[in-house]
Amino acid sequence: MVEMFKKLLNKITGKEDTKKSPKRKSNKKKTTKQGTKSKGTKTEFENRFQKFYHLNKTRLNKERRGNYKTKAKKGSCVRCKRKAKPGIVFCDYHQNKQKEYNAKARKKLKKK
Image (cartoon, rainbow, N blue to C red; front, side, top):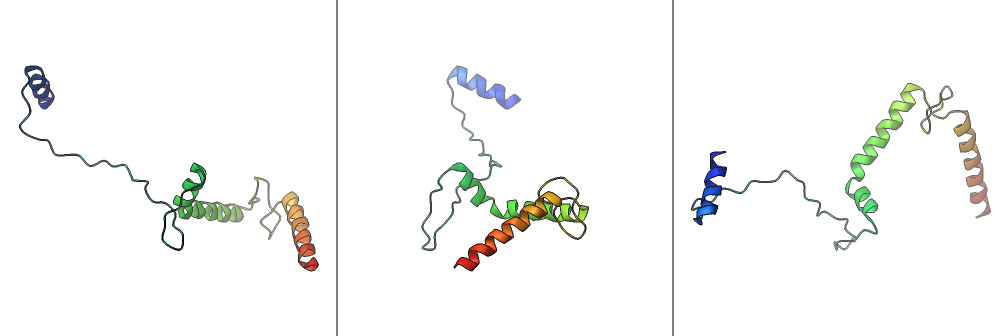
């Protein structure tokens, strides 16, 4: 508080402060890290969402895996909040959707 008044007085009288106060370090994290290609050149991201995802990929994936495991242990469907079938991580609705998806995928593999 005293320093503030001294600075104000010096500013008014026109005297410069002979003592320089040490610079304070900011606690902000620098976000200069960007994705890199195999050659080591920096890439530009298409939009801010892609940049956020790539810079926070490990944390986001840990959160997703954690949510999946807690829902599975709890006995609720991992895709919604309904109760899951016993021994399965999906509810009736999502189990049927998964069966349809698997059948469709198998059909595509047979065509190749």
